[in-house]
Length: 283
Image (cartoon, rainbow, N blue to C red):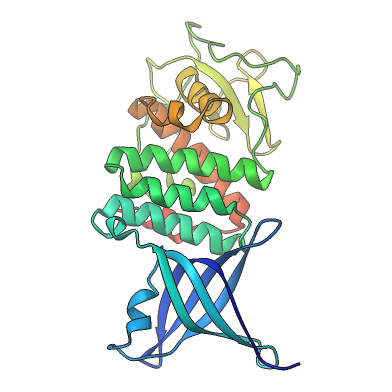
């Protein structure tokens, strides 16, 4: 098979050095059904114009020279359509972008092209708090797109539809109240301790059964993930409402902590391994 040149839309997920002047590049490339990860090589020294164009999180049109015999791809040109320089201006933005990149690479491109690019674009115009909430929405949509998000809207035991206000006002219902931030480590390291008083639990997710249960059929314990009415309602809005609606929804520290633990756990389950970006945090 002869060598060939081709071009495609691409998103630069990561860039790493080898042999001082050269770079290994991971590209996310859209296909008819889904996306794929294309490993490529970028040659050139510090003064190379092309080297300056190929940077992490930038999107554009890439020209590649492929050698099927060596199973290699060489980047010969790159026309940038989205620079996203704003991602480097905030630690929260750059960390959220790194999370997106790691998840995409770990899942071998099992993502939606529009979802990933829209998320990165959104980070560029968000403050730190907006980035944090935006990451939660991105993870939930990613899980839904991959077909691994649990059905949180129906009880896995009685089959009843779980209402947003279910459990509200119930006495004695346990709920997570630890509003852990980004820097507290990954899903494995986040405390599941409960305290009182707390907002009533609306639903409970059981990792062992990969099912969600209403508060009448299952109570919260140390091996499950509770979702308060606020946290449950936030996921409902992300699922059922237009993106602009959920984007402007407020989220209390307690509900944020619940969703962070729940979604980080499910994302690492999808990836099949702990994520370094989750473990490191950004503070």
